[in-house]
Every structure is written in structure tokens, then in C-alpha cells.
Length: 501
Ligand SMILES: Nc1ncnc2c1ncn2[C@@H]1O[C@H](COP(=O)(O)OP(=O)(O)OP(=O)(O)O)[C@@H](O)[C@H]1O
Ligand SMILES: [Mg+2]
Image (cartoon, rainbow, N blue to C red):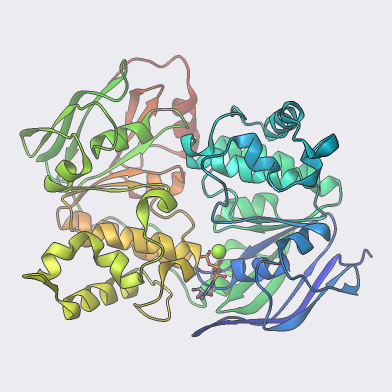
């Protein structure tokens, strides 16, 4: 039997007010893909940050190939062959793709310490291609979408030729087809004997790519199993500690005939325009691949892009020139990239949730603290946000809990129309069920949703209708639960379909 390449023993980590890990043992073998699962805040990222030298453990031991090691910083870990792709991107927005991949690296310099740009760009290009992606390595990171940023993180990690590669929710921002490309890369690495830790909330992926799975709950290890000796139900049970019930509740809401938002020949680019109606109390899903125009449509509807198109909101013609006008007309937007547009990370949980409703909470110029606290408490409970208190700085929360706060913040505005992109990205399965219930019940109260999601089960399970976009046009409409994953993907990638419905 092969020996483990890594042994972590009795790892405990305390933060002020939180014990993130409590005596965790974790082993890793060469050539295995080891999934790490658990609810938001269970301790997955913390364990991986300890393994990669970002945090030091409060107590416990780490052995690499039988030898005890201490890592004071990420460079120590890198020198020992451990590389991590972080859940929160660590890229420099004003540098190019290639610069980001090779930053801080001695091997990027030629003789006399001069940087050889030609060779760097070429190597970066090869790396990006090897993942099956298509990005210009000279582009600045700030001009790229979330999914390209994810690709860069992966390329950067690959360039380091690690023995242990940690991927903390690498697929969270990737569309289906690129997840498959990434899996091919992972399979190749596994063949070469690299040990891979794969952190994800997506069951389907775990069963597709992992050999083993370890579950953490509340900072403790619950179990480690071979993937073919466990089931989805068993994993959910280990993670949540109770039954979750039906993930997609039978919808109780019935959309009315009344149209709340009507787009007619609404331009999303100079050439492409779309027409659709959103009804009161409806959950209207949109599906499309990267570049289909959906993201642009969402940003346009919220006034985030130059150029203005008119839409009708409650039969009134409105030019959505900027987000302020959109919000005045009851439109809110949950962006897919919470780092750029969603949260003020230096502020507390409470301040983030109440930021959009300050006017409502204020009496004259003072904020009514009691109301603010009550509002925050409601969302902490409803969305199961794991935080030591309302005063905790958002930056210190786990990734999934940050996502829940972004969602809470927009729900708190009680919009009439909520445009959501990837609302449950990185959210654990238990909290997902809660969020779906909440969306359904808000819809029965008359709130209307535009739901944009690459997670097909979610889109199919929640939407009253699904519009598929392809190449800047709406090419197909599906009724409730009429579409399945295959048909959606096929229509979305079909290049012959251009007729508009
Ligand atoms: N720097 C920090 N300071 C204080 N508390 C922290 C810090 N980092 C993490 N925590 C807390 O430690 C716990 C574990 O967080 P961690 O990020 O490891 O969770 P996770 O399992 O990765 O969750 P997710 O699925 O949401 O990413 C959480 O309660 C979190 O709020
Ligand atoms: Mg995490």
C-alpha cells in the first residue's frame, strides 16, 4: 500500500470568538482526488489555509512524506510542493493575465534579473490553452469576468507543478462546459501522482471526480469515505446532521397575468435586442453559455452599462440610465461577483445588510438601531448565516456566508423585481433549501424574479418559465419543469438557432 503524502493530526484553530477547527485529522495519498465537504462555515477553507501556510494552527501537527513540517507562510508551503487555488480570488486587477500567473516568481526572470516578457506570455498562453480556455494573456484582469479569473487562478496553480494541489471551490464561477475541461486537467494531474483536495458544494461534481470524501461539521471531522461506498443522502446527512427534505419545494406561488416588467426590442448590444415580459409573482429563469448576452442583459436592466434602452415597469415607460433609477422603480440586482459589486468587506454583517435600506431605518438623521438589529437578526436566522455576532466584519466570514449576506442585503430592500445572478453560488445544501423556500414564498407575496443561474437543477427546479439565450438572442422558451439539463444545454449551444420568439 502506498504511504500518505500528507498527514494532518489534531488540527485546532481558534479565531477571536470562533473555534473554526477542533482536532481535525486529515490524510492525503498521492494520485487521489479527495473531496472536502461541509456546510458554510464548517472549516474547510480554514483547514486548507493551514495546509498552505496562510494561517498557522493553534495546535496540531502536519507531516509531509512522514516528516513533520512547519509552514510560516505560503512561500514555505509552495517550496514544499503545496499549492492552493483560493475560494476568494487573489488576482491583481490592473496587471495582465500573464503577469498575474507569473508574479512573484524567480523563474520568470532571465539573465541579469530582467523579465523576459516574450517567454512569459508564451508560457501563460500554453497554460491557458491546456485548460481548454480562450483568454488573451495580455488582457488586464480587471476587464475580465469572474469565470476568466477562475481560469487564471487554475493556470497559476498549475504553473507551480505542485505535489499537493488544493482547489477551494474551483468550479463556483465556471460554466458547465469549462468544468469538464477542468476535470480533464485534474484527471491528468491525478495520473501524474499529484494529490488533489477538491472543495465543493456540488454533489454531482464530487461523485464525478473524487475518489474519497471527507466531511467536516462545526470544525470537526465527521467521516472519510471512499466515494463508491457512500451516497448523496449519506453525505448530506453527515454535513447537516439532519434531513434536509425536498431541496426544491413544490411551488406554492402562481404567477399572475399582470406584467410588471416588459422589454420590447431592448438592445443589449448595438445589434442584439430581446423582448420578454415578466409577470407579477413569477420566477423567470434565463439560461445561456458564457457570451450568450445574459449577463449584459442583467446589467443593462439595472442601468449598469452605458447606452439606455426603454423598458416598461408597471406599464410606465422608463429609461434605466443608472442603478439609482432602477432602484427607484423597484428593481434590485444581485451580481454574480460579490467581491466587486456585492459587499463592503470592512463593514460588519449588520452594516452590510442594512446599507441599502438606511433611509427606511432612519428617523430624521439617526438610524434606528433596534430596527436595524431586528432586520439583521431575521436574515441571520432565515438564511442560516453563521457568524459569532452581527458586529462581525464580513471579511472574517466564510465564503458561503458572505454570499448569503449579499442576498440578504438585496432582499431587505423589498424590491418589486429582483434580478439574481447565481444566487446560491458557494452556498451549502441546507442553506440552499432555505433560500429556495424563501424565494418561493416571496414570489407568492407578489415579488417577481429574474433568475440567472448556471446551476441547471436550481434553474429548472425554481423557474416558472425558462428563456434560453444564445448569441445575444432569446431562442427558446420552456414552460414550468418542461426543460431538462440536456435540452437546455443543447438549445444554449445550438449555433443554427437564430429565430427569436
Ligand atoms: N480570519 C478569520 N477571523 C475570524 N473568523 C474566521 C476567519 N476565517 C474564518 N473564520 C470563521 O471560521 C469558521 C470556518 O470558516 P471557513 O472559511 O473555514 O468555512 P468553510 O467551510 O470554508 O465555509 P464555506 O463553505 O462558506 O466556504 C467560520 O465560522 C468563519 O466565520
Ligand atoms: Mg470556504
